[in-house]
Length: 440
Image (cartoon, rainbow, N blue to C red; front, side, top):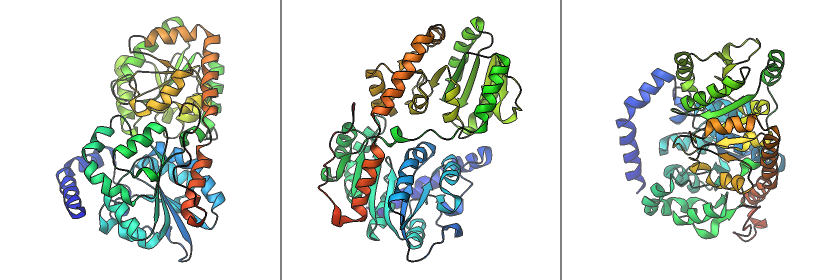
């Protein structure tokens, strides 16, 4: 079975090679770390032969943020282990190197035995921790063969991915036998993991690690912008984060209505993908919108326009400046993005109705009346309604912060479960966590 999978993967890579080359030439994507992806272990990962290793894999920025607190706790509770982190995307790699040290971070290898084996031989991981759902057949098989314990943490199965997983259940049932423990976000995810072939006795519910992610220390830009807004007497401030293609025109039209009544209003617009920064800049120019690029901003007062956040890693902190936050990928059918970051700042949150990728989190916030869900037609009206009603804004933001606090604790439960894998003599019955936290 595995050689057939490897052959099909090789054929797919060969057929899609023109796409990857185009991405490299146009956007510079996938060029970085190419040797590492092909199995070249970087010298910076060298370690004493006797040291035990925990290998954490986090695909991109979202997963890196989710496991940040977990990695900190593992380093504290398992000091005899070195924790190394792999990512797939360039943006995830950059953030991971900042958070965990360049000497501990590398690109995840392609799912071929020749690329995987050098890392397993060099790192000799005692435990492999995979964030969310990265089921690479060859990697799981090779790691299991070498005696590593394997855990999938913060596991979730989205509405979009579930049908595809079900279609290949015959394959996943065999692949998932290599995983020792699945820690699901919710009871629904636990059931879905069982539906796609995960052994039921190995699946527990530990909650969502993203509820435990502490807000990052604010970068200097937060203070600079706050001073700039105050100097220009700017406001209200609307932060639109993680926006996607076809969404910015809807937001900008709604912002035009705001400017008509509040000429000193500011929108901080943060496209989800860095390769779209230039495209969104061109859109703003075409629409004749007054705007500033974050990358070129020198501290001048900002008022009555848009700040294009063409930077990485600053959005989470900038939600603190918002009178209203909009979280993107939700006005158009992209599945939505995480609403926890604005909730950490007690900011009133607006989202669209396309939130399948975060159904449980959004459903929880909706049940607490802690988020406003709108259609594109309703968006301008809701912006104006909240701007004109400070008391409602404050109440909505407070409910979001309270909902977030109620759900914390997944990190402690996850570290305790991973500790049982590292020290099986203290293991307890699998599945003993059950239902965790309100709404989960």
